Amino acid sequence: MKVKLTLALALVLGGLSAQEKDPLGQVVVSVTDKYRAQIKDARKILENPSYSDSTTEKLPVSYTLKSFALPVRIQPEVLKPARVVKTEVPELYKGFVKLGYGLYNTAMVDAYYNSGRSSQYSYGFAAKHFSTQSGVADIRYDENPMSRNHVGGFFNRYYKDFTWHIAANMDLDKFSYYGQPELDFISPDSTLNNGPYNWYRRYRVETNIKESKKKNLGPMNEFGLAYQNFNDNYRSNENDITFRSLWDIPANDQNLNLEFNGSWFQNTFDSIPRGQDSANFFDQSFFQLQAKPYVSFEKEDYSFDFGLNLFLVNANDSRQAESKTNLYFFPEITFRYKIVPEILSLKSGVKGSLTRNTYAQTTAANPFVLPGQSSTPSRDLNIFLALDGILSSSLSFNVETGIRNARNRQLFYRNPRFYSDPFPYGMEVIFADVATLYVKGSLEGNWNDKLFASLGAEARSFTEQSDIPYHLPNFIANADVSYLYRQKIRLGFGLDVVGPRETFVQDLNNEIPSRLAGYVDAHLNLEYIYNSRISAFINLQNLFNSQYDIYLGFRAQSINAVFGFNYRF
Image 1 (cartoon, rainbow, N blue to C red):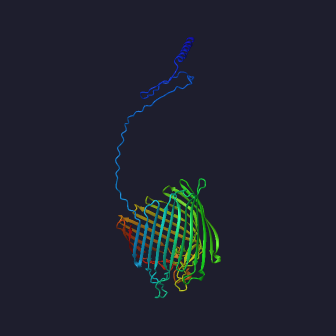
Image 2: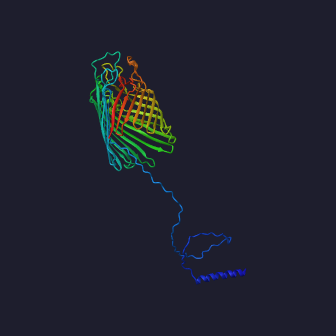
Image 3: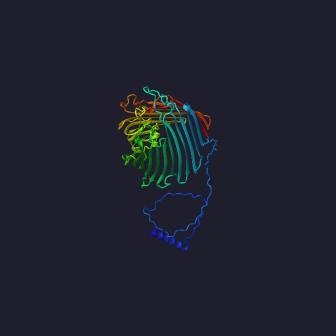
């Protein structure tokens, strides 16, 4: 044992002596070949090894890297050159003109012109005319002329953050009060030729600003202002000013959407048609504010909209009893659920709104109304459940049921003894409460952009009303089909089905039926496309020559054929 210790001590002292004689310095190492790491077999020296640092000074090391290329054995496949095919881009036409003429001295003209592509501005013009002189069977007047005329234009200016739009339109429409059918118990009158008529004149200018993308205009998304003047041959006059705006207000992690709109319109009636009560000389004006705040939540399979629709309406009337101020509010709740994503979805909710019922809106719905009709806002509340989806890659559907509860709904009424001389020749406007239970559905299809088809129907049951729902049918349906054959012939067919309608209380007059029969009105359109610029068409209206009343005493025109040409430039 002593011998071993003596030998170990001698080796240590010898090492120390060698270090003192030859101190460590810099060592230059040159690597001349690839480094090949080798791992030797591990061998345990001690069960509990001791660690000791032989020096506290780190050795300075300098090194250099020499690069050289490695052989790559990958052979990439040679790509075939792309085949460039010359494809003709269809010409984009700026203008369109449609000219037609048909039976009963029917004339039509449609003309449009729009500017070409530009990143700074766009503009366009439009003009329309349609008129017909007769064609209504079994009426006491020889002719029943009507005419619709429209001229308008627009200009858009595109800026970096928003688009500025301005438009102006003029409509001049003539309608005859021809609603005097030949009745068996009325003797013919040879003095009747053209019946009374009315010209409706509408002039409108509008402008709006809309942001190009979100947040360009801060919280405001859109703002618009419009002015409209509407007058007729009986010195009725209506001025209408409206503004609308759409806002997106930040609220932590959820934005608040806000629609804020307002309107003011004034009616003046200072001349009345024959047979009307002189009490219809009056002036009305309405000021209305609408605020509709709502929020939207959307998850993976469902979305939810919640809001309120608030209206403040101030009515001023020369008849003092009609002047009043009211506040209305309606819930705006919509829930959507994706039963099968991209295939089938469910929607349910409740929505309410208020309709102003201006004189211009009333005559657009029924041009046979008499001037001097009182205006009252209508309130509508709709509770609904809907299902929509796709049946195939070409066919989609929608089904909806619900309850509509309307207060002061606008209805059109005609005195059941309208054929007698003391009574006015036009129609009146009355307002009644009507609740409707409805079911409706639609199908739409598109096959290879050649065959288009749509079908819709609605069944109604009037569950509550303060008066008979005059001229409102219990059932309506429509269908449209169009087919393009070899890019040369376009064929279109459509029809409208309207169920029976009640027009007055039968006890008031037993000489004529109070219930108008239902009807089917079909149309057929045929167009031959000669080339991309020129085509010819034939339009057949009331294809089955159905004899029916649009309103009590106002019968529809018989079958009509219009021929014409289309030209693009």
